[in-house]
Length: 193
Image 1 (cartoon, rainbow, N blue to C red):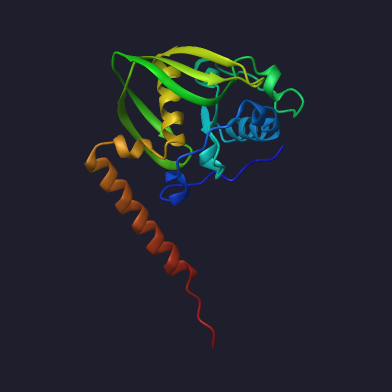
Image 2: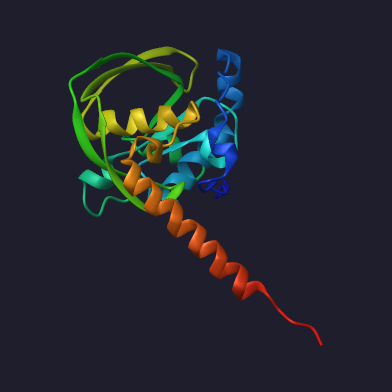
């Protein structure tokens, strides 16, 4: 398994809408899915979309247990990563088919470091997706799990949670990015005599 490079905002590849997989492509994608899970766990995330690592496929992995169970041990062995982590959810071609209620949750993102914001989402959802075997499943989610599903599915559609943040928070973050880029360029300048 490989730790995949996680793209960071404002990388334009994060805005690409992912393409669905056929049921046959599901089995072919298992090595990628293992890499996604491994990367999510190593980066200390609770969800990761394939688009966040520059792969244009509608695949997400989620495991919120690290936020709900303290000191949980995760299997990062290649053969066991998908089976030993019983709270790991793999959703291929996920699509929200039902939404109800509202919840405001403070979100963060592996692709937008050092930025958190309160985002309003549906509190209860149903997601239709394919599982690892290519079989269609319906997953009901609410609270944190529902928020993570919505966040990751947005990634597959080229939508980032910063788009849903208040204009003030968004502009302050963008200004801090520009400032850090200027400082980096200043450090990179070298003189040759």
